[in-house]
Image (cartoon, rainbow, N blue to C red; front, side, top):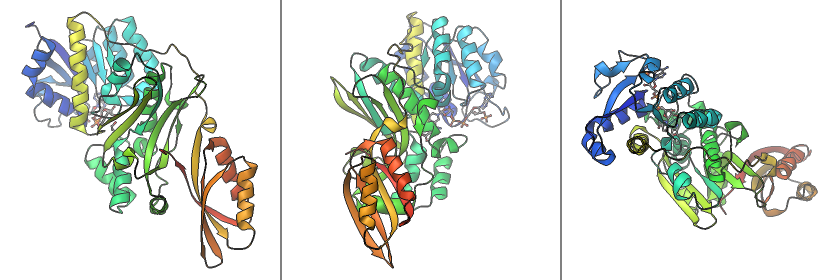
Length: 429
Ligand code: NDP
Ligand code: HSE
């Protein structure tokens, strides 16, 4: 074994970074044996130097992250600060000064992954980011390496722990949205600004990363159609239960049937209770990958939290250190297919629509006509009368999202439709 240590600079020592530092220290001997050389924590950049950080040598703490990445003797920079800047500049500076980079920063990778990949390639270094999608679950490496010989057609799953935790609590305990969000934040699952979680930006960033790797094309955050889960109500859960379903925030990336384009979307959806994703509880994540030769694969595990995420970061640190010792690099960006990303309107899906309507003759026929005019076929209709009004629940067959949303807009304009109580896509059947 080489005795000269490989030097690791840690940028950020919060929920994830503090666990990375702890595991690096407590498992130092095992890590050294697996890598073939000791790894040394050479510096830890933070914002607040006076904060007590148990287990981290205070002499390693600095507020000058730029100086740390410019030292020239750093082999691996672990970026767990988050956000776009200064993270992007620190990463590109790290490459310029000879380091490889391990990052958990899905927001940055989804917004400007191309710049990071290009900098890594230019300087002959690694960019690894297993922790950026689905916490502890090995998913990026299986997609980039194990499935590199296959053709992936679909990736669908729960990729945000915070929102799954909230939806699970709302469904199973009747907890309120804010109460469940506060608990997820206290457990270290939420982003620094939890809007990123609940409005679907975090899941959309992960969808962009997954779609890019799965389909060998470039997909950015802006390409992903995004709806958060803040509008999901107890009434939606009640409707879902009546259909034998629950509600999950899903990320779905698909290759079009003709293979000429891809789509990527994040939105809440009803899924049958019998579907494996329905039983994904708390902050767990699960992702289905459909590949031409391999068939259907499912990846499941803790999707957020300091320790699970640190596990993924440390796996990357080991891989990157091994590459350094072998003077090799792992896979870079693969975007050769250059497929266009189609808009949400082209996605084929199903809607569950709950309408408040006047309870009088001809209303059902009027509603059915609107569906027919938009080329949308109805699967089931359920009507329940209440005091001269009725609740009408329609579940459609599969149709383009543009036709389904057009149907809803036309329904809103009918005099006999008092209101659209809930609209939810139905997936997983
Ligand atoms: P935290 O907010 O807990 O930690 C951020 C750390 O970065 C803190 O130590 C903070 O310093 C430090 N920091 C912030 N700004 C600077 C700066 N300008 N210079 C130096 N240090 C700075 O975030 P998390 O640990 O939760 O998340 C880190 C990254 O990991 C994010 O990209 C996140 O999306 C990702 N991630 C998080 C997961 C989770 O479950 N939490 C799961 C998967 C990925 P200080 O301590 O002084 O405030
Ligand atoms: N906030 C993220 C989540 C962290 O809840 O999934 C893991 O990426």
